[in-house]
Length: 159
Length: 291
Image (cartoon, rainbow over all chains, first blue to last red):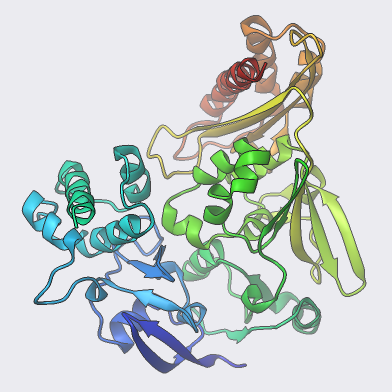
């Protein structure tokens, strides 16, 4: 073992191998090494939520995670949710319900919401608020985000 | 963040040997949410990180009767949602669910939380009220330490440099007992508390008097602490608003908070009294539902 390590991370379904410095953060690995710039870093202290990615399906703060800790695991970023020609129901709902304005927090909101509906397909409003609590938004007042998630849940249940 | 050497031992023996070999320059890492943050801020600059993630046997909950043995690397989220924890010790599951945000809870481990020694953290307060202890492993043997002996000062615990915290042990709730954990967060819900209180209240066979009680307070001193004077005062008294108010006031003397963005020292002291009273009320009302 040394100051860097060869890691293999499955990112959005694709196996990616890279030699990374032990002190490289997951957010920098994703953005800088893999060109997946959908994940952002703003507060840098795990509070704001714009760096949200799913690690083995669970939302985490990529700004507080070392890239080496993702070795052998699965990471889902916003780029892995939906496709260009077939949006994920969460994305469609955010568009239809006005779940974003400036868009700065949106990648993190989408990832967190996708993680929520994967684990709890029919969440109550309380469950939505509790899960999404750490994804801050300065524009929407959160009401349209909650509505978007409820709409996405309903759309998915209707399938 | 400064560069560091990263080690990934595959056994406790290997991890302990690394700590022995590398000494003060090495730090253990589990979920990393506290440590990586401190390292990003250059407050901690270890030359070596020893990641416990591949050491087997450190995760999971074992329930024996009402007692719980929890592996140190179990995450907050795993405990919050665990049927065993919710069944044996609902106040503990509730406490873990109040920590920060779901992103932190998915990574942060219970062992890392206790080893951090930060009096503002939630789980130690409830675990203190539950008479919990930790198992500390070293190459020369294991020992158990009660939680009140574990916390020494701000960010300082009694864990020796070559010891590894492997388990958290929680005895069964005594009969006729209920717990409550209250976290006062006047700013935002994901914040550390201005004050936190956990109680475990045990009624006597008649159900009317306090047979035993534990009152633990966080965010109000160099470590999570027990309000022993308040506990002593409540034992034997008739359970109810009058006793809780009187006992709450004694909590004022148990705490020694510092002024910070979450409140002045005077405010935190006053709130400790208020929230001890409210926590006792909550535990009592849960007890009444049990009867």
